[in-house]
Length: 169
Image (cartoon, rainbow, N blue to C red; front, side, top):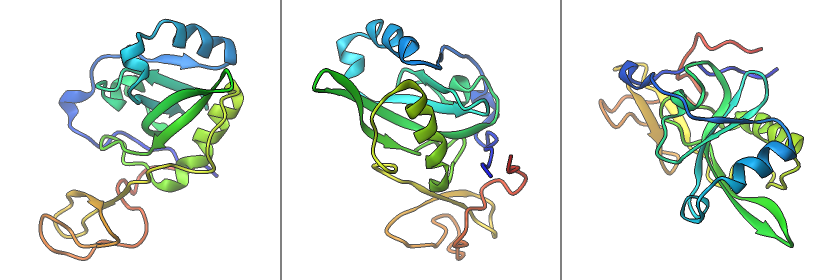
């Protein structure tokens, strides 16, 4: 079962769009041909929608705008490069402070990339660990396995808990 992640960030960022849904190798080829070389040198903002499609937007885009305000199966940043004339993923993370997806969202990313024929790693190249503090309710990024809230010092849970109402689908 795949968990859907609702947007948990600031309400004022729930605006805009501009993401491109990539459902096939052809879609990716058209999209990548439209990107300036300087943009291709940086990672892009991505989400995997509840429909399983990869959506890409410029790096400085908000994930919630990339997703059109909808729940996602995963979100983060992704960088592409070429090996032997083929497009591949160079780096991919679940770094999205608006959706705070768990590392277990990787299979959704892999399936979306497989659908369009882009070679990739077996997991996130940089996995971010998100937790909500049971004391002050703030969202935290856990660094170096230190499961302590940076805001109030409470212990953070071992399991993902950012949005307990997020449903498995």
